[in-house]
Length: 413
Image: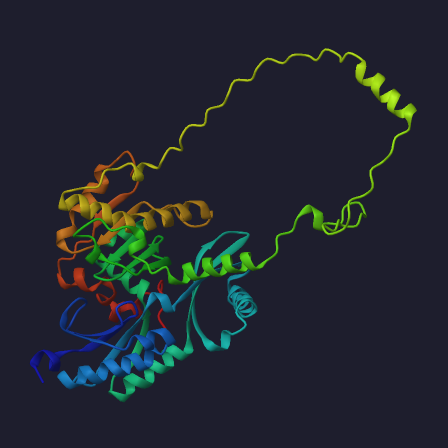
């Protein structure tokens, strides 16, 4: 056992459901004092069936073949995709009874609440209504991880939601962020976590299955970043159902109580007119028609071609920097959509700043976006990751995971 492993005070366990890996980090004294990383892949089938405890067991078995980890406390990062974040609004009542009112509303909305662990925080309140942010996770996940870590003599002390760890790390690296509403984009190699924060309070998160590795090389279209198998299957099934259905026509509808006409039935007999009726009809047709009012000719409307959005009119970049900026638009678009949703919500704060956690070769993205004052209204900045350069490539979620239990604004299970 190396001295680094012996001196480790705790470990952080993170499950990456996109890359199908488990990363175990040995920590030293103080936040961000990383000693050593161990990362192992696990079968993709564990992610497909949601058996993450088996995934951790498989990875730890391989890690313990390389190093004997001492029996220390373990902090487990709960992946964002395993969390459910909801907002519950109830009438404002006395402070001593508002907790009971929230519990009642929670049990009404979540019938399977006995199978969930929850953590709630009040994010907005006035004389009429109070809004709580609710974070829930399945008991099956936490209890299963506890059993597995106990098998390896690791005591799972805290289960920290991934967005909370990212937000707390950003606050420690840049304390001024606590005073403003911001979006934190933790862009890693193969995935991205976008965290939305109010003034020192977590509001929500959004994860993407792609990271900074696609930024370089050539321009990547959005359709190449997602697997659209399920969406294509839905469209194909809808088309097949439409083909199988018989189209309804007016002849099939019973209008005014009349029976629908059968195409195979013989035509009705022709009506015979008398000689007097025929003579009257001829006299009516001989009369000169009344002069009709001549209307001026209407000018023809010529339809012009639909104007394409500005981003579809841009030329493909040729420089390496231009390719990086063009590919980053796939992440920028999601950030701007979240910012727009906060603006339209009515109760979420207006976003002012966007923080990026990217490796050094991509630090110019923030300055380029700030220079585009015509289309950009937000302030983009890079987080000052100076204490440990590995944070840029690994992710913010491990930086302050051990200290999360001291921050009551973020839920810890």
